[in-house]
Image 1 (tube, rainbow, N blue to C red):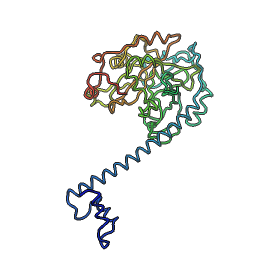
Image 2 (cartoon, rainbow, N blue to C red):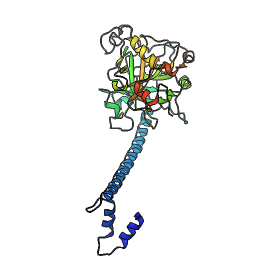
Image 3 (tube, one colour):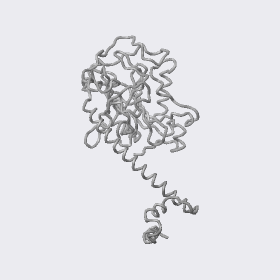
Image 4 (tube, rainbow, N blue to C red):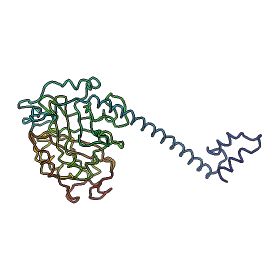
Length: 363
């Protein structure tokens, strides 16, 4: 009997019997005397209704969360510190010549002359009043939407660990829509000293916020050539500090995803006996989807952007960039970018099991 006929018979039944609403309720909810097939049908229906309600609730929370996140992003971008774009001198280059060969992962010793301001710029005051954990600002100035707005243009904080800001916004409120861009808690930026390689974390959001657009660096070498620079200014920056991208690669976070091995790129903060520059260089080169003739060594400063890969769960998409040296010609550097062949790239086993031994980009 169809649902329509069943309900019609319910409505037209003897008034002395149970009223329509009770019989309607019994039609959908398991009741004493029901057969096994009828109970199963009703349970499936109830489960379907529950899933639907949860989905609607999740969607509503997602949309509201995104709206609030976008409002907060707009508010923060209105406080973006203005940094001198005249970088003809290297007044804000960090000298870490005495940091190599140490035995710890703490900040470098800073042997050598300080070449940075020791004062925090006044332009940072509005952000610091909101959150004293603010440490800098990151942007990719060539990566824009149709309205000319930057996709990556955010303040950076540093928490007490690498978990605190995963789901907290810059105002320390819980956020399921991206948390905050944050710097590795064990790295340092202080006047005249900084960690050799600073990892910066951000969620890969489907809405495209935070590091949601970094996946586009999987699309091919032309995209890399068109978007080669990352701006990373800190509290002490006197001039804009730009970094040229060196390598882009995939990394697993669990040994079971790659025959028991994990490249712990985050641990290469300061290059020393425990974390040799040569080992780090070898690992990032063999995994990278691209190559170039851009020179780099242990005396350079680096940033590493880390986000989840959208192609497969529990994998990271990682971008390593070196701070521009004085008077470098960016065009001359980036024209040396080349696409590496699939067979030349080291892919974690989990990636190979899912996609094969090849590069994959899903827009």
